[in-house]
Image (cartoon, rainbow, N blue to C red; front, side, top):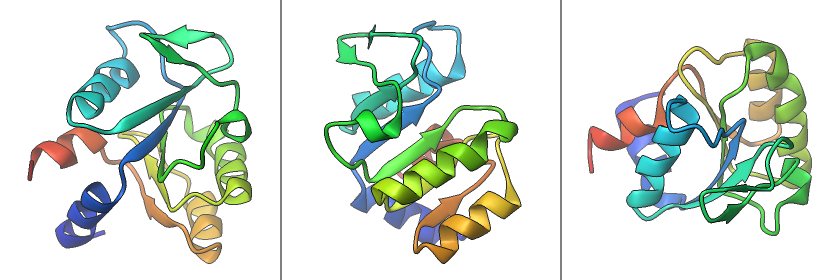
Length: 132
């Protein structure tokens, strides 16, 4: 994925479901999400272990969200990626973003075949901060 494509993703997509978000400020999912929220993105935490994170309702799965997010940002182990990608395909998201250290070539190819843009092994906060 080149820089032009990454910037376009971050410019054109404003709702982000954060799969694996934690309420701990010491976890990357929390601090990265707080950064994105402070930059005007609408966030939907997805983690069955919480009812709320910050002042936001937390959802058990992507299928439980009240809207279809533009981006699904995955903060889960690579072994969890295929199930998240399958659900993202079912609900019709535009972009799947796998954070640093998160990748699955087979799941990424499946998502691409379904017409979804895929970013792997990159931090959405780092990429955003490069241009905005």
